[in-house]
Length: 281
Image (cartoon, rainbow, N blue to C red; front, top):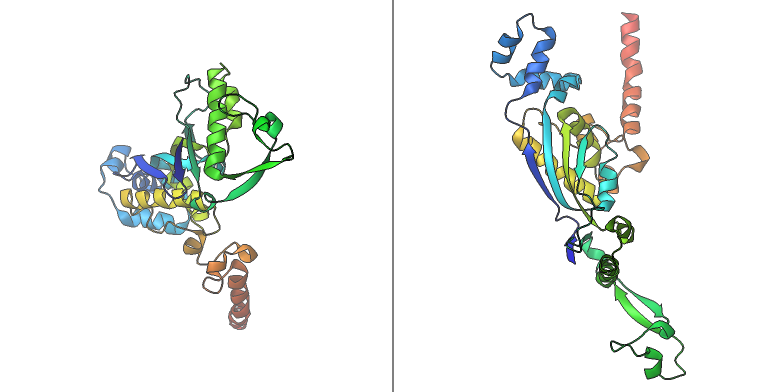
């Protein structure tokens, strides 16, 4: 078994960045020039900035990014694929590898030492030589327990899985034994618009720890590859100036970042005075 830990996931930028197609797309909408002239125009970061500030993000959909990810658990894969404006190629777990498949698991470090006592049925246990365990115990012993930790549980699952492969069972069926800790590897494709929306949610402190780790690593790569497009990328509170989570706001942010409800209350408090002045005029 190859045991990995939450936070150690790897993200690689396969493609994206370089020439900014948002600039070309933005020019195309209003320009009277030919396509050839528009494409030949020198890059203008102000145009990209204006597009992003205006909220008209259709133009940023022409900048596309490909990522390779590994070292993340199936727990996180479930949350990742909720973003439908994306393309995914995920390493299969159903193809038969004839016992050569790596048994890779990803868990939080904090749960590894957790130990529980599991009752064992001595009537079904045997020693290595095959003799019944009950033959070697005091007849008065009716129940024995074993201290089992997370690593041992995963090792037992791996042993069970390997036995199934050895007995000729299809790995397509045996994968049902695997826990959510099973590692997944994937290629992810998203345009810049989808990424900006995704970063707004998944870099928030309320996001699950591992998906937030992935999003932050992806965002860092995007900011480096295409700094003008992703200059203001980040959690919703950074983009909006307030937290739309309201009562669900993360504890670390309370009192530091206004919620949407608090921001609206401030607007309503000052807006009537401004309105009255305009009405009198």
